[in-house]
Image (cartoon, rainbow, N blue to C red; front, top):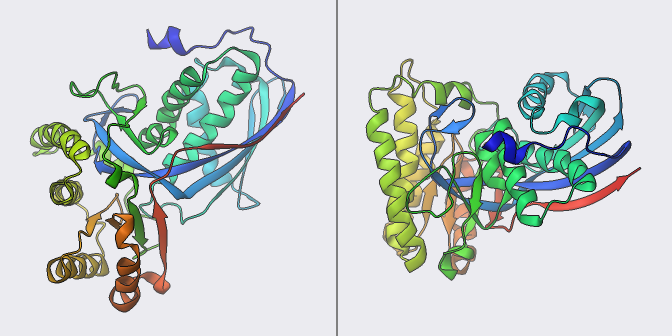
Length: 359
């Protein structure tokens, strides 16, 4: 069914050449997905905030050729190290987008944040690339906005699972769950049944370690296959998806804090109890978390922490607490950040088409 629904016509009259640029954001999962099935299907459903300032800008230039070729430029410099992942992505999507086999591609990409450091750069990167590729198809075929973004989410997932969620804002759900209408393992859906307070949420990312992770997310996901606690974890995630749905609708910040922090800590607990086990926390990760919890208790400010698969801490809070949060960071937390660096972000609305031309 998916093969038929998302396969472009082999004889589609796509452009001879052109270029398209998309800006696509990262996202931060509130209920985490950890563990997957072939190919790029989640072991449990997840839901995320779409970010605004942490994004990838990708320009895809293309011209007709006898066979596919790809060059990748990161921050203006050619980077062959990314080619393997890009080629894997193209091979996975070629049955749905057969036209990709007949272009010479040049990909120029840049991030507004450090890649490979636990801020989902693969999510923003592959979603931006999928949107660029699908724009070629949209030029030749009639695709409604809904169909365009759904197929873009479907293609993004084949590059990086979490990339499927970056297609939508302010929130997205990926993975089949009985409480989320039209949810699917194959693509993400936008989620809008959210109290206004959560639409204002800020995410200040405290950069504990900007270096590349020692253990890739792909390896971490694979280790869930034989994890002694995987069944309990997947059930916990299913329950949390149900609970968070009610929390997001009601605007209950205290329950939001409790659930989101439990999810973040469970994610890292799975890493620390896998075989082989590993730890992505750094000493300053723990220092920051402890300081935030102390501040929340002493000043009654609803700060919340979450983490992706990395050492950096995401400090979440409603917009009305932005100034107290920034003062707190400068006074007490910045000393734990690498080179005293942090990123101020907030909930955003999803990708933006920046430029396009075809011939």
